[in-house]
Image 1 (tube, rainbow, N blue to C red):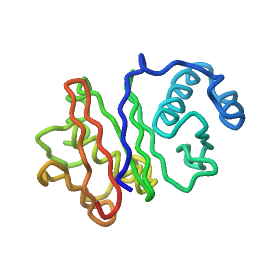
Image 2 (spheres, rainbow, N blue to C red; image 1 turned 90 degrees about the vertical axis):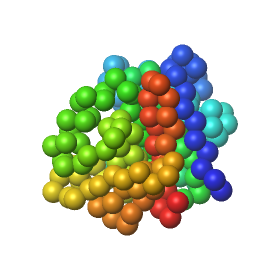
Image 3 (tube, rainbow, N blue to C red; image 1 turned 135 degrees about the vertical axis):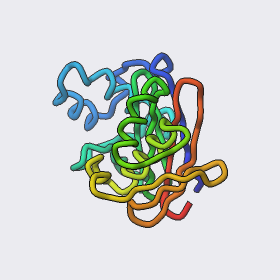
Length: 181
């Protein structure tokens, strides 16, 4: 199955706790009030891809996991933007707003990673970290590298090389990655 990827603005996602499954309602109730609307919108974005009966649980690392569905899901958000990726194999997705360009360029520079588009490079690195189920700390002490490879970015130094597929918009870059793609 080709991954299904969708990027949505928060204005396209109602904050509708009634759309959540019982497990999701129980999970959102444990979150601080300041995080609840964002969390609900993320689950509604997943339902937009998989249908209204899709239900998620929370894995030990905080990532969403599909309940009663063998597929893999990854979710990202930055400000008012949400990105969802679903695949038969493990997948990672990230989204970074272009407004963060100077900040992520500085972080990438401190890690010795030079890329022409720091937002795309950052989104691709984060997608691979999510794919591997590693935290951002995994970049410390590694020789991670990002290189252009046609319409994708190749990520090295975080396990086997991975190609991240980019979705570029004037407001953001989303990147998704699966092993072997």
